[in-house]
Length: 176
Image (cartoon, rainbow, N blue to C red; front, side):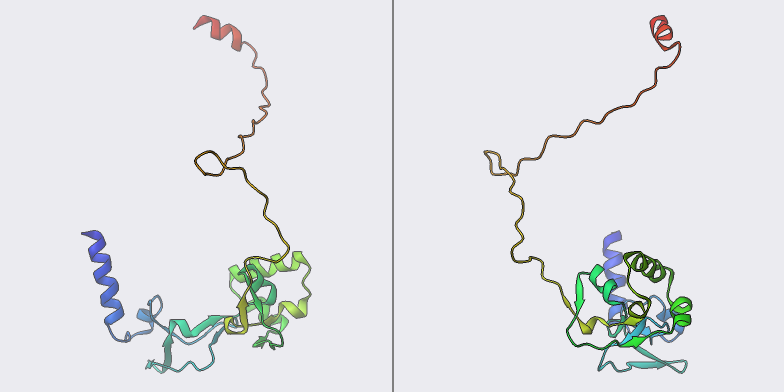
C-alpha cells in the first residue's frame, strides 16, 4: 500500500501542470526556477516553460551545473578539445557564490595543484564527453577461478592485535 501511494503521488506530480508558487518549485521533480548561482547555467537552446511571479520557469534537465576541468574529471568526463569556458569567475565571486560542496571540491583541486586561473574557468556538461572506461595497453590482473567458474577470493589478512596485559586479570579469571 505504501509503495502504491508513492507511485500515485509521483505520477500525479508529473502529470500536473507547472506549480503556481516559487516555494512549490523549489524541490519539484520536473520544473525549477532559472539559474541563481554563479555555477549554474541554462543549456543551449533551453526555453522558459512558464512564468511564476515574474520569474522564468525551466525544465530541471535544462539547468546544468558548471564545473572546472578537474571537477569534470572527478565525474569521469573530460572537456572536449577546443571548448572555451562557459563562464570565468572573478576571484571574489568564486569564493562567495559557490556552495560548500563546490568549495570543498575547489579545496581538493588546490591540493592537487591546479592553478587559480584554471580553477575559475567553468564548463557545462554539454561541453564535455564521457571518458573511455578502458584504456588501451592497460591490462587487468588475472584472477584465478574455482572449479565452478567463480573468481577465487584472496585469503583474509590476519590483523595483528596489540594487546596490553591487564594486571590481575589472570587472578579474576581463575575466580570465575
